[in-house]
Image (cartoon, rainbow, N blue to C red):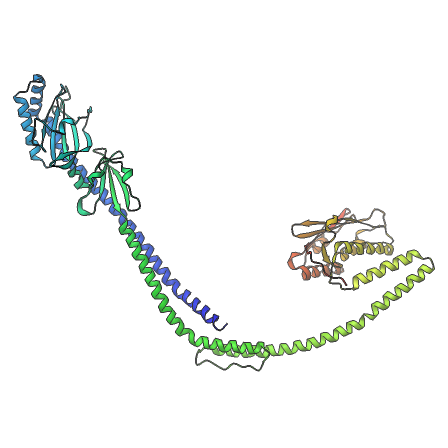
Length: 565
């Protein structure tokens, strides 16, 4: 006990002291994580918007180049002349090739231009190979047709330039005079180096992303990823992926946000929290030890004093310890008063024990009277038999049984079977006394006959019924007792077919606090029920004037057998 109590006090002190620290640390942790999460969301939104704006600028730049090309009068005239000349190569073709070369040389990232003629032929310039005659890649490209607007397409097959793979984007549009939509003059397509797009998506050293055409990657910092399915490249444990459609091109911008920094922050937060907890435990433990030391000495002294009192030494008096703990003066005073009170109570108990022994002796002496009464009844019974007064003999026998049953161990338990046998005798004698023929009917299943109840628990109800229920001497007076089980309780009903109970009296009978007047037996039954069963026992009455009275008694089931003798 001496060792356990200080440990418990220390534990309580630590708990009380550490709860605010842990609460504050956890709150700061959650707040920091929340701020970091919001910051990450802002970074993602900022990266997507920046990438989208940069992509718009890139496409606007090259779309303007394409528009100037498709509406340039000189180029349109050259194309018309070439279309009119057919397959014959003429000066217009060479002039157009030179013009395409000039345009490619003016703009960084423009790797080629191709014009598709109406007869299916093409005029192109390959800036990578500096050739207008042959190209290993540009001649293989197809220009998708579209009625209106430009077509944006990412080419997933790389072009080899000096043993280096180069990926392209294609923007195509129709050749037309400004403000005119008549005739089909052909289609123009420009080829942009994918690096121009990649710089926008992965600029600044902190932005990473893909450009998707549906589910296919068409631009990436890792060139091996181009042409692959986006779902195959996702690594949700390492990165967070957020997408935004580009309205101009129809492509989808996918931002890649590494979550390692976020996880590292969480780790650092948990580490700091652990350090705070350990430091707090250490500091609070030292403080608790220094604080509990004087209290422990006082507690040990009190435990020793209480142990001596427990062994019967009531001469114990605690000394004042206000020097150690100023507030202990009151405790010292009350403890000494308690020891004095216990001593006086023990002395009273010893005196009461002596009185109880004297009362037991008196009780044994008083048992002479019942034995004398039983012997007298037995003698009268034999006299009645000698004079052939058999009815009187039967009455005396039943009266003797009732006296023995009622006087002997009144608080004992008995079975329903024994109680009902006694009640049958009681009703028989009551009929003789009142010159009636009241019938006692039992509705009790055989399997419930061995259930336990306290002796004489039903007698007051039977007595009241015999006295008050039947106003006339009739042959159809019936007292019916039924027994059943209601969950874990025995439900006993006592019903008569007598004159019933007035409403005012019925209310008093069902009110446990009411003054029962002459119905003392009912009040005593209630007291016995509370004594035996506490709040688990319930009794209430119901009645209809000139019809019946029914009493419901609920008591807990008890299966243990107790001796009656």
